[in-house]
Image: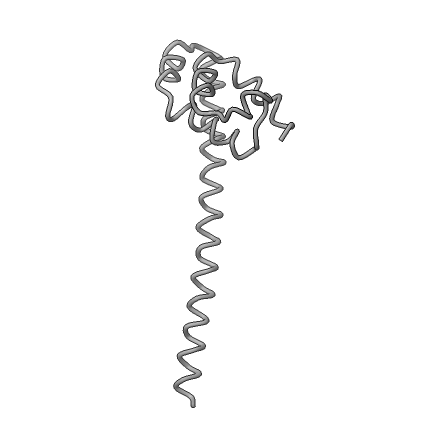
Length: 112
């Protein structure tokens, strides 16, 4: 968890991110200056998609800063899509196992 300290400090340099952090972060995260990796991911997503102050930041960005933010957003969306794909894959494996179990039970009953 302490490994998130540097990333969190960098994130909080933005006024809108700091305001969002103050709204949603746990008292422990505020006191310690770091949080779990999962919490940091949620903070990163939330500060962009659930924070109206971020829209003001975007409108004020120009040139290289705007381009870098676009790259960050794209990378984050790709990461989230990859997580979603993995969850779907795991769900498909479970569905396949359930189907195999159901088929096995059905054929065991019919062959007796």
